Image (cartoon, rainbow, N blue to C red; front, top):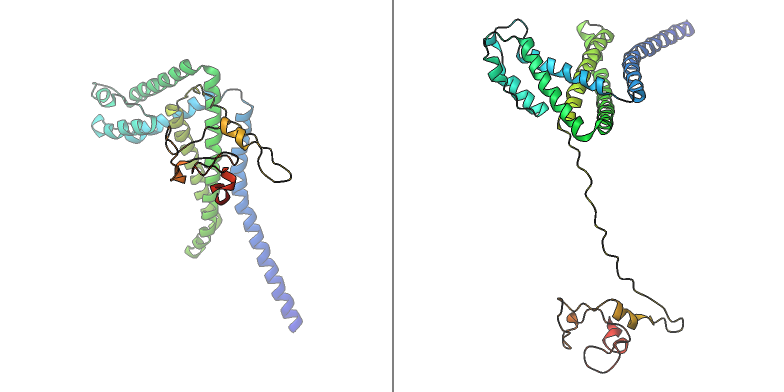
Length: 289
């Protein structure tokens, strides 16, 4: 009966491990589904020669989200958060629009306000295209879009890992951890897409291209010649180097002080010692240098 008990216990453990692996696979499926959406979209973006239409749609979607946030649909004009709308447009898009003056116009609707903001923002982007040329602008748009997408996707994966680690606690509240994970993972995914629209739009509205300035070539360094005597190991070109590289005696133009070796600068080994002894430098103070 002991063997049978052990066999049943082993079966329970294996069944439990199978359930764990099955649940892990379900959790992985949620992440893989989101990964497939992002990767397919990225492949399409890479194939497109121009993503101008894509970034324009993202720009309009972001502006619409901001306007809806501060000017709710079917709300009275007195209920509009005009100051908040003006401040957010300035902070994110770097545009200072007379939204407060537009809101005071009699009979203006939220849709009219949205159209005016989108028009001004589109004019700002059109001016950048005219300034830099369509080819440069297309390159900038594609680069910013792909780099921002990659960055936010990596952050999103970290968020999913953190969510997965804490979602198991939901089971103690009689809630299905997998369903909780799916729901919150989808909310995080939607938030990432909204952040992507905002980040790409903000960068494109603020980006400036600075042409490279003409760089002056630095002067070539003075080359010193060296020739070592195989018998003595002395540098036979040291004296010639004196004429190639002017000796720097302290400050420019300062004379060598025979009593102050610090003012001598660089002295060739075959030069007369600046101390005035009449000996060559290598046989005088040069022995201690």
